[in-house]
Image 1: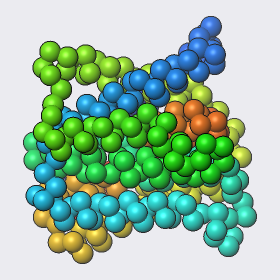
Image 2 (image 1 turned 180 degrees about the vertical axis):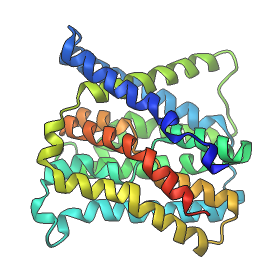
Image 3 (image 1 turned 90 degrees about the horizontal axis):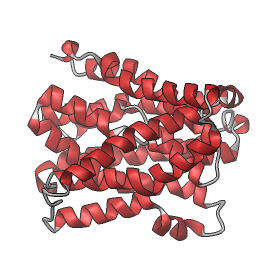
Length: 305
């Protein structure tokens, strides 16, 4: 069953949209000023709407997946700690730009929830989709707060100010509150949310491509290799150990493994750019992470065998 999944085909749409945004920005009249406006639209409206709908779509039953949630949160906390601590390492830290690290640390622990949802449904079915929805609902606020914190340290508004003004976090908190209260999006307006969500994925990835500058990756080789090693090598191995430690069943183990090997979140670029950090560098990391997902997903799922 695992071999039947064509990971390259699943990731191709994301990578193609990034490439399309890069080509349009470089070789047409739709240049950087146009895409800066697109970034604003994605950040303040499209991505928050998508997050809200994704969290509200399936009821979150925490007690039924407590072991999976525990393993996921612990793995996420370790990923955050490893990403944060890179500048403190004896040899590596001296070769890392602190400001670029603040913008890109999120790449080491954030995830592409849409690829995760698609794979979990294909591998496990409806049960996998519901378990993945629980994992996403729990981890999105934790990871978004962790993504904002390093960048907020250089902001005059401070950490709390950035949190309450961050539309991704606001949408997540509101979505979780509505989910726990048993609310849902009315059927009449649900198609509107769905179409906005589809637009956010396409425009967010194209905006990442438009902001891409490969020279930034060359300038930050040590940081690039370190973060992508955490995201695509260390986390899958860690997930395998945690699945055994928490005695997860096969379906829960598969969900945790998928979570560990996912490409990073496309919205990482938008967040860094909107907070005034090195957006082109983060866009490059998003692109590389999407490409590496073709290798890390089969590697991680191969551990199950």
